[in-house]
Amino acid sequence: MKRKPPLPERNPVGLFGGYGGVDRTRPRLGNPDGTFSTEETVTVPLDGKWANLPSIVDGKRPPKGRSPEDWAVEQYRKGKNKPVGMFDTLRQALDHARARTEALGKILK
Image 1 (tube, rainbow, N blue to C red):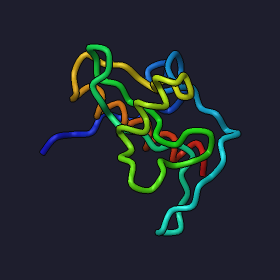
Image 2 (cartoon, rainbow, N blue to C red):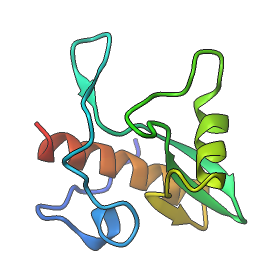
Image 3 (cartoon, one colour):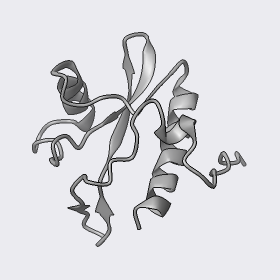
């Protein structure tokens, strides 16, 4: 069984500094299960690296019929969103995305 990376107690540079700090002013979008999201990301190959890109842009999820990955890359190319992380490997990107999601959940309760 693979172990998840430990969650830091504070706001570490690897999760919220540098790329993609925490923006507490983002709108809270409702989810079908009653929870909310301020950020949803996709992991995509981008410019020779693996990027975690927000797929909620300007408070909106991708339009119906659009894949979150295509939407996020399009918005990135238009300069409307920035990566919350860039990594050499897919594993690094996915591990960072999971840790960031868990940490954001604790911060934005």
